[in-house]
Image 1 (cartoon, rainbow, N blue to C red):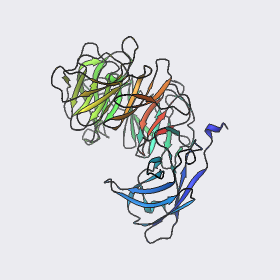
Image 2 (image 1 turned 45 degrees about the horizontal axis):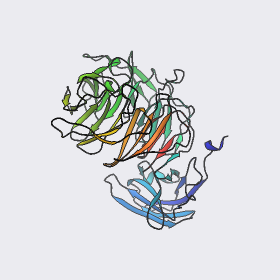
Image 3 (image 1 turned 90 degrees about the horizontal axis):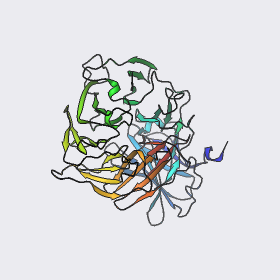
Image 4 (image 1 turned 30 degrees about the vertical axis):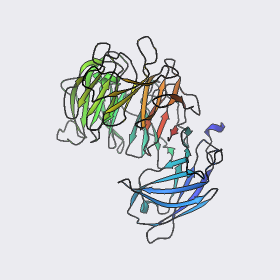
Length: 447
């Protein structure tokens, strides 16, 4: 087995006790494909384990000086549900190593050993366990708050097969199911996947391994949005934005899935409806902005550069930005008023740059330039770290993928541990950004 596929030794065993019981569970820290997480200079000297509840309250469970083998986490109410966070710091308190678990209940750990992946911050690191194939341009989604779904992709022989990575065990599942159609676009409502291609849509229930066709919806065709990105609003309403796809023709259709409305028996996991943008677009970017709605930008040489589809409204409204014909930019909200656009290709295949738009602008608006990218990339995805920092993944027209740390003045490449072609990225169930595709390894990033 090649060295980069081997699991690193498990480190730092920590005992965990439920209230009124003797310690019967442990967490084991793994560094996955990296062997110098705790030893490379500057090396962490202290390890801290915290519990974070659903309200964001943090309780320190234990601290220890490194190197160490065992940390006693004490006794806790076995009904409490928390996320465990492990932080390694140097003598000055700088965070060098970090990892987190999925939400877990103390009592459910009785008698179990829970693996927890930790990595150096500010760089990419390989998770434990390799995926069974290295498909390019995969479709990614979180599943049930614990799993990473990997499907679709550009290889037709693999496109209906799936890969499921379990973030409670930090390992891929064996023998995951196949879908009834290639998921050009995908939305998960609980354990039920809604997969769409040019010929229609299908439900697939991962809890039952059963499928059925999704009835057609008057006012549009599922082909109008197949290939579009899936954007989830704060309340769980899901938007499949056809204008974000990069295959012809341009479209103005948005499929809206409302999981809070199960009144229509044709759509048992959430009622469907159509929304419409102000103009057809191709390769636009889209993101959700709290308090405003779905923001769509670019993808047209004639329409306004930015438009807003407000929550619970069926039609978009244009904002006074000049047209933006770039294709394949990523978009993310920096706050409730500002959106960062990153990457994308101009009509002459040049870099569209990193730029910020102000949703509060009312006339003669223009994007504020952050920086240029070292190379032009499309299929870009961008993730906010804070209002002044972001992380992005994109691919050159040749397929070569890159990752960058973005600030208002620079775009700094974050090297992959393995070369990638047509990679994709998503926020994982533990909150890290993970990169998948073009290699069998999954790589993780914590700022």
